Image 1 (cartoon, rainbow, N blue to C red):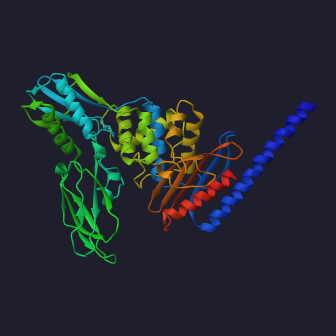
Image 2 (cartoon, helix red, strand yellow; image 1 turned 90 degrees about the vertical axis):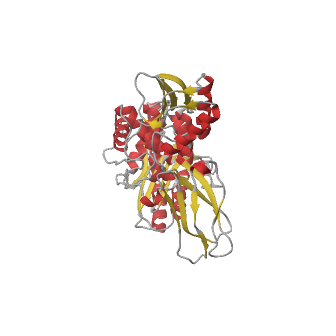
Image 3 (cartoon, rainbow, N blue to C red; image 1 turned 120 degrees about the vertical axis):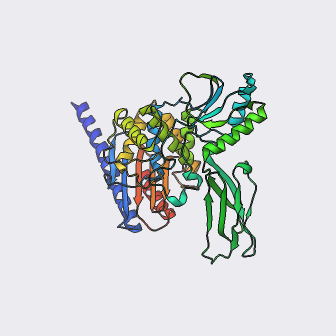
Length: 461
């Protein structure tokens, strides 16, 4: 009897402790929000993972634009459906006198990998191709840009085309610098593979009070024009430019690689699907998906995320991957395999770049709790999250605080959007999952980061 009474007192103590923690946390978070902006459109969900108890929630059923925290959905669905060991393959196959280069959408494929494939073909004793060389781009279909992507961002790397052909992230970088004199030409540094991606530079240096801006335009032949103005600056400006026509770029690279490897082509270079009756000559295999997911989450890589989105569409539908099939695929995978309730969510891409995407804090929390409690996925999922003050998109955030090295989370930032979702360990050694989503504000995202810092610091105690 005494033992039973003792156990009851212990349980009561735990409940009181939990209630006290939740009450203190609620007061601190509510005060932080009131001090920042009592009318802020913010949704929060915080769960004690050890006890599976909700410590705090606010607007957790309201829909928010997730920005890059949507990549958590993409990561979990990819690991579930494809598996951590999945690898993309870029194959060279033969049918009769023709050669087929089958692209799979590998987001890590580089021009060096294409050079290696050409050399491997030559090492297989293929010196002369009597027929044609076909680029097989049928793994993906539909539009190259996601629904709801901003038209004025489509020439930038983070909105690069998402197609079966992806070489060097479908992106290249050059660097622009100004002179000290207004009206003088902007200087562009040389960059790799410039002959395939030339820029006609007519931009000029302008004073800081000028209303003139840079304007970059792309043609279907991957020729670019840079006009307008760059304001005087002491530091150069990196221009990360999306490759407008990935298939043409890949074809030109392969033509050069074949020539360098000593493989001659007597036919034409065309695009066409690979026939069923073909045989494999050689292939390039990407690194494992577990490593690709880490890169995607740590650096918030849109191109990887959207390629995985379309790849899931192909995997689930057994047809060429499209944006609409990708939405169906992610929803089906997460609902059937993870038993998540995504009835409110609208998911149109894998990166979170589209403003059509809408999810609730509760739906994001479902992702976090499922991944944490499933050991076969938790290592890969957790390893990909940026670590506060250490790496990824959190490298310069939460420095020199109790949260440094203790918080792992995915960030999300766009104009008027700031989100943060992940895990941290408290002083009580409990693991907590948290989601903070703010939308429709006019201040800078940096100001929201300060509020997010106060919220997670309150959780640590």
